[in-house]
Length: 171
Image (cartoon, rainbow, N blue to C red; front, top):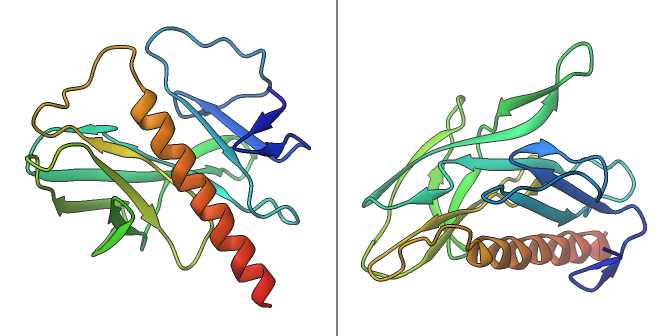
């Protein structure tokens, strides 16, 4: 892969397979794996935090989510850390619901509205946009078909990149 969402790969991509950092494009990917790819927006300090929701798919009227981000312990071993204070979005619209100190949030969703993309934004850190999908009426997930998740992640990552670029240009 040498181009992602129109950006040439100059070392600015990040990849995670099942929530674990991938070290190269040669890392194995199996049927049913989740692959998250993104373009870093902070090309100086590389401070973008990979973030993900558990669960990735929601089918009830209330999404009970846990948002974690990639961090490191005192020995620089990778660990998942709760993301506190991130605002939950539904199809890009802010909800006024924020994650608590354990990264947990509860947000009502309309399961009759079709497919809804849940994500999160933060004013205190650059998050790689996490994605959870609400499978409403007639949009049940299909095994092996993650095109909606990949497309949602692409749109959200590009939006985050554009937002950061706009913010940087205004400085």
